[in-house]
Image (cartoon, rainbow, N blue to C red):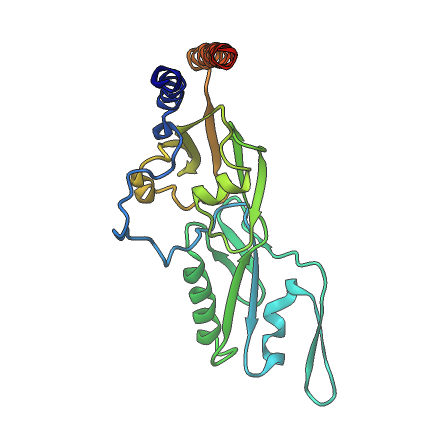
Length: 259
């Protein structure tokens, strides 16, 4: 009777031991209860061809109207109140030289600046020109896009309004890494100073947090490398082995049952 229960247990041990979770678990070397620093003040950087939605406001709304020419139409009533008619926001396109043409202030160089740096520059220019004493300036991306390709659930291009997207957010948005994707070969292709640079990551390691690509930038391409040939042969071999073991287990169970 002891032998009867020994063989199924042995086969189960073989099956479970060959399927190692270390190949698939994300951030497996993180220690419970241990803190890992994060860049909570991360801001997206402006690049050429970005389209920016910039809004200026103030205590006296009518003073801000000239600075919002691209944000819709405004109407000032006889009592001084200002109403805005919503239209499709065109925003300000950053040209190939990294500049935007901003109302009243003229050409501004914004490429390479963070969001807060752009809003601070515009605010200071408005104050220096004595147009508004205490202007409020906000900025959003109208076309912050990134692409996810390779061994994921569904590849494609995705967008974000605030420009705060991590590589893990991108993977999740693309339906997670597919069974044929390599968790330890996730590459971010980024344009830096006119050149394309590739950064490869292992999602199983906490070192992912220290990557310059943990937060994605405009037009980044995330590529999850699929498994090829050798891995395919290993998968096929393992499939045949598990099938054979399952068949043997079933036959043994029938024999033991008839006895």
